[in-house]
Length: 83
Length: 434
Image: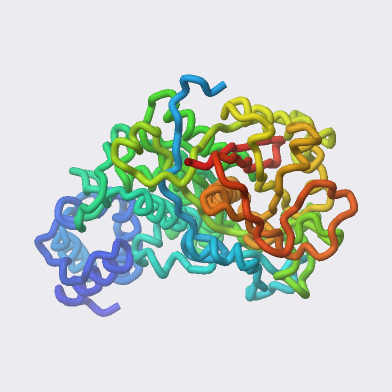
């Protein structure tokens, strides 16, 4: 898979979040926290992580998942692994 | 006896059934004698012994957003839909979104504000989230454990519906699920009555839900020879008391009611549909699927319902029978009715079997038929048994045929019977509010 730009990762993640928890794509911006701002629970985060792994072709182990608190954290994580 | 007991009234009704997406559409279809039974359009349906069922008239996806639906089993989604209708029907305000909680919304707050501390939930299912269990197992086998939805457990557990309803409405007095096969939601009503009588709650959302029309169920009930096999005329397959009945028709749906202490209902000026007068239970302790042929267990449940409600056999003008359209069961229940009420009182009342139109909702049946019993008392009208063309010679009680039957005026009472695999017998008594 080609390396995705920051915007592509953001768009892809917003699509996943819309699909899984029904939050409008426009709400998903880099500074947002999944738990505090988007009100996403831990089980939904598991689903989002699995969908993100499939979409971006990277592994997100459980011990990494707990450190990914904001949308930006996921973008940086995916970019680092893709490079 | 019911002397000095807190009186419990029904102030809200909700249902989504094979006949309609709400109570009014279901009720008018029942009076018109319509059938909710349809052919199944599944792939490989020809491999099944039974190729029809009573599926929902309105799909939950028409009312619940996709993202929420992903984490609800079908039986839970329809339980929420029916609970919302009952809640609104009772004149309650939409639930307030609590701090840190997930229920509620921020819409207009017209209506009575219920105190969550005094609000309970008792919602049953006989089977639970069967679709979820089987779909997740398919995913596991095809794609591995990581791809199984992390909501599998809360979606398949039979108490999931009760939990979701308690969250949505902020009910903290207690949330319960009684599981007793086809008697499950009748037990839920009985337990809800007791929650109010014992002072644990002022208001209880109670009822049942079932959505297990799945090839495995068609095979499992089919292999028991419990289902009708009238594949060429599905809408005529459910025919309680007819000579040519050959088994039940599987149905899906949910029905809920709001029970309230009379005092609480009066204080807020609520409209009362009927009095939830009492509930009687017994266990056959005979066989895991066959009812005790003596009918003594069923009769005991009816007698105990009368005693609990403080009613006499002469007060009962109508029974919504369990009558699933099986050759043995329908007649055995009539024998039990005579044993419970005495021949004379039994001959004076009229009996209907609405499973002839809705199919058999299993764990949802008791609640749906209780809703229908309440409407019959309120409207003074009993829907006729559908497909009753050739009355079984052994039927010697008054079955409502052809046209709906008018009920007399006054504080009349009725019973709703529900019996389940496992030998569970439950009879719920309702009385007209005058």
